[in-house]
Length: 325
Image (cartoon, rainbow, N blue to C red; front, side, top):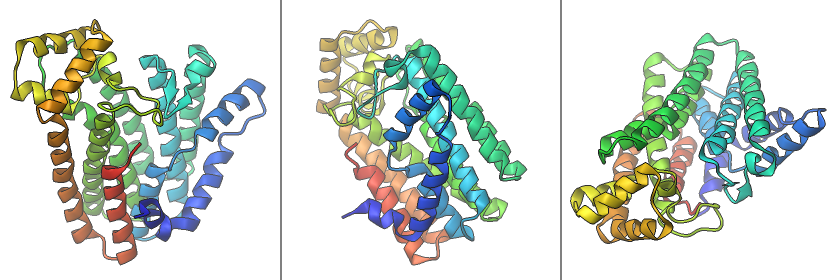
């Protein structure tokens, strides 16, 4: 099944308008800035977050200029956060392409990230909607808090599934939550409708992050993320958290402590990856994705009346669960 085609079908012209507007923000006359922005533009991506904004707007009334500027602002904020995250994580690649900090240097990456963030604020100001502006500003604060919580959690010896969800709710899930909420706001949805949309977005974002974490337990040159990359950065994700809590073998717990301390070796990461797989970690993570899928489907059944939009959002949820990268 071509999920992306189904997702895009009700918003094809809207998406083209978004891409044209977004790409126009990544053009500059300064030579170095132009080079870096072109590097970012070439990365493109599937535009999952803007598509969610557009679909939500269609569901609650229609796509407007406010919707488009909101979508550009949020995508620029997301892009800025990725550029800065790569500096923090010292990442050499982003989805199979050299990161900005690897292609240039940390100073350039930080400054370009700041430029993108400022451009995001400029575009969201074009909406003239104080609620949307406040939502985007709060999202930026939440993403930063999520990064700080993740860093502080590295020092926490407790292996907690609850803390894992706290972190992703302030990172990936917060982005999807804002997409759904801002899309609804831009179309004039009621406060109650916006809250329901935001909860749908949060649940969708949790699914997205769990799926992303599962990738880390398998080799993939396509995503530029080797097995155990998260553990190499001091992060324990859902599959291994579940396995460790279900089967508290002391040698494995000691390896988990080494992960958090940043002292684990590649061979030790391989042992933990194997342990997670052998103790039901992947199956549990998949089960949790399906649990959140049911919550998403409840929203679609209750709040999405038009079949084309409901089919597109169903395809969106299923694509997130079944995607390969």
